[in-house]
Image (cartoon, rainbow, N blue to C red; front, side):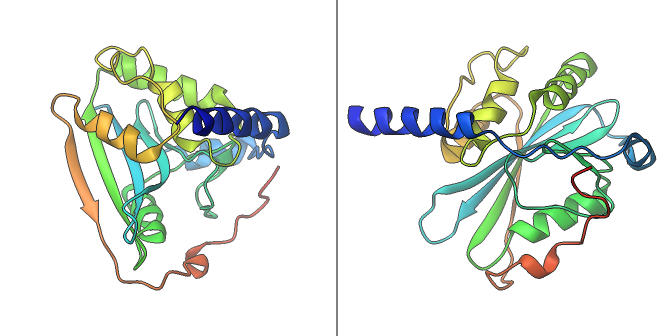
Length: 202
């Protein structure tokens, strides 16, 4: 166990040292895409689960604050109508959220969405944190999400973890979490569901 922890720590340092490519959509694209959802302020932890092994494959965070954004650290999804700035996607309308979950749910994986209502102040603080966190290196998705949530009111016991499944289980223990699971029998190769991004990387 100790050897595994040392290996993981070393790998994490290596990946952080390598950094992640920066993606920065233009101001006008971000402003034009901004979407304010009428629902109450909330945080939705999104976990992609491998149907064969039961392991967590990815963590992301949907933030409903003054606008709704998706923090998708080191993710592979993108869309022409969701401009990105360093793993933060803007314009997350209900349809765009559906497109995102449909991309991940397939014959090999399903999606778990856990929604927690929070105060407007907490939602806005999370929005600030995801926008300033920076691009995330591969394999650090759960680590980055748990770091962003650490210390927030009502989430003090969440702690940090590099494992998506462990983060999902910790989040599930928070009071009044609403859980939705999404299954789909689409083929494992889901690359065809990606919509090309105009000016991606600017």
